[in-house]
Amino acid sequence: MSVQLLLLIILFILMAIIGGKRGVKAFFSLWLNFITLFIMLILISFNIDPLKITVFGSVIIGSITLFYINGFNKKTVSSFLSVTVVVLFTMLLVYKIATDAKIQGFSSEQSETISYLSLDIQLDFTKIVVCEFLIGLLGAIIDVAISIASSMYELYINKLFTTKNSLLISGINIGKDILGTMTNTLLFAFIGGFMTLIIWYSKFNYSISDILNNKVFGSEILQILCSGIGIVLIIPITAFVTSRILFFESH
Image (cartoon, rainbow, N blue to C red):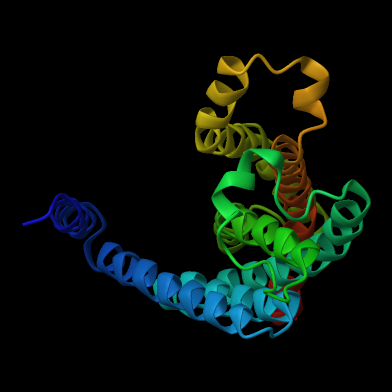
């Protein structure tokens, strides 16, 4: 038995024991999301517009993560709508930034790796960078959206708030508590991903200016910042959408 298979079995057992039926659903949703991402990559490789594929794939992943695990209800509907809005808005914002920053393509550190590969792949790497940012952001904003919507729903059904505006303010306050921990989670996740790059810079005595102007480093920093923007945006949008949906259906 391979190590990967053993860890997969351990993960499934732990999720089943601790999460019960919902934990089992979460496990299978991981596989469904992985298959979705794999199909997205195949479609992009066939020169289908990466942005359209990513937006469509994000909708599918959001649907699987929210509706398959948590069911179809007011909480998941408001979370899904909020995630969709943030993905679309972030895509427009990041595309402009990525274009101006010119971080698409390969850096000098990757020259030896790609020297024996064909460069005639006919893909828009600016769009590929944007897709990378959106996919990296997706899991975090889904997590924040469902956390805020669930908390607001509990406040609503227990009749702790009588107006949608007071519930909206409560939702934003809940989001503020999540904001700090989630942005730190993203920061450490991305830093862990390019620790080898930092070691590379250290071993080859890169200057600060070389590092700041390096394409790979710039891409990582932009991904952290754009993900932070997405996390900030999902809070008021989810609070607003959830408060409106809950009070709209009650009247």
